[in-house]
Length: 238
Image 1 (cartoon, rainbow, N blue to C red):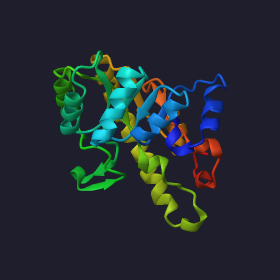
Image 2: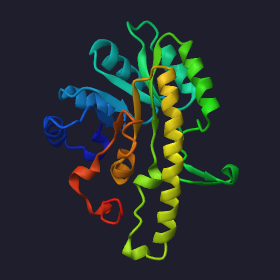
Image 3: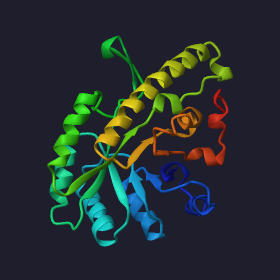
Image 4: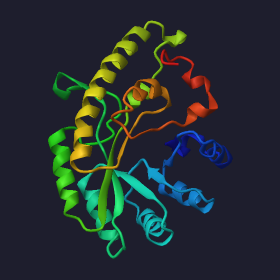
């Protein structure tokens, strides 16, 4: 899946999607971005960040129910899920949502963590509770899961300006990757149990490690790597 939020060049997005390579769909930063790209003829949007703005709800409903676009949004809290379900009352088909599982690296029982706290959903039992709650709702439908490893994708480990930190960063990334691989295997069983179609992970900075999980994930997101920026010069995986 192409991260349009990182590329922001419609011509390049179209060029990538038309190559015939296994690129499918866009990951957007915001609802308005998906609306804009839809007006240019793009389709299949996964909006990677939750929103509670009424205007965004209206745009989502229009894209899904009137324009019949393929669009889903990431969620991470039951309050937002309930609000979205209420706003979608009366639509012809349930609105697809993607539930995010937190992938930050936690040690000492959670007292120490590395990486962004992207979701309050951090245990399998909590995840199952939310999935069961979603099943009772009429106007939203869980389509998949996402686990993004920002502390791996966004941190270089061979930076000559931080040479004394590089060994620590490398070790952190190594053990984080092992932990995430275990998590994703467990989450893949949840996907099978609940017939979820999407399991999203990865980023440009963690593409190679995530690629090794292609038997578990249904899609890997990449974006700014298409520009080959110097930002990714200092990654061992490159």
